[in-house]
Length: 244
Image 1 (cartoon, rainbow, N blue to C red):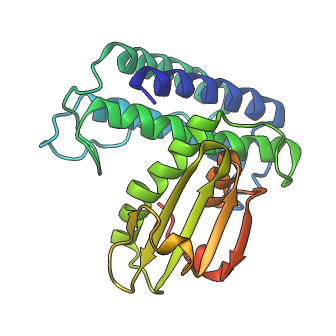
Image 2 (cartoon, rainbow, N blue to C red; image 1 turned 135 degrees about the vertical axis):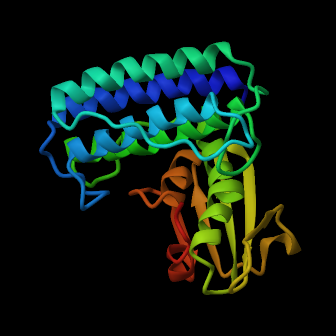
């Protein structure tokens, strides 16, 4: 996927999330984030968008940007968020993806943020959908290429980062297969070590657990959201993966 694709996805996911959040209402519980209401969900993501906007404008070798203060009142928060999001979208759309920017992992450029925020917003869109319709798997389908990229981003970047903060405690080999995208990833875990992610070896016959389905289903599964993915083998190993 190209930088412009991620910027377009960011807008699509934001609009859908906002529609679901408004329909659910600020006091609705979010079953996929049990400690949150929809207000908490939007407060979190609005802050993430504002912080990322600062990060895009911060030099790679500068100090970590500080979070923005944002309103707690529902109506004021939505107005503030819409203004902030528009500025974020405009900035990402006009900047080169190679523009040097502060990031917490991966390449230090603006392109990192377009990709990261598109997926962050998409996963929280699911949370808003669940708050509106319940814990069942929503019927919406993410674009195959976008969902497969989200699996890749989680496994190659966010999982590795999460393991730095919460070390891996169990060893094993996991295989992820997004059939419609024709993409497969193999993850090797060893206690106290960074996860190793790469192509399948040994014809995929030595896996302790396999997670397979459409890219949409595997995308939801790796982020711990309700999913139609089929998990075979040691499911507890999959569930032990540290989340970013």
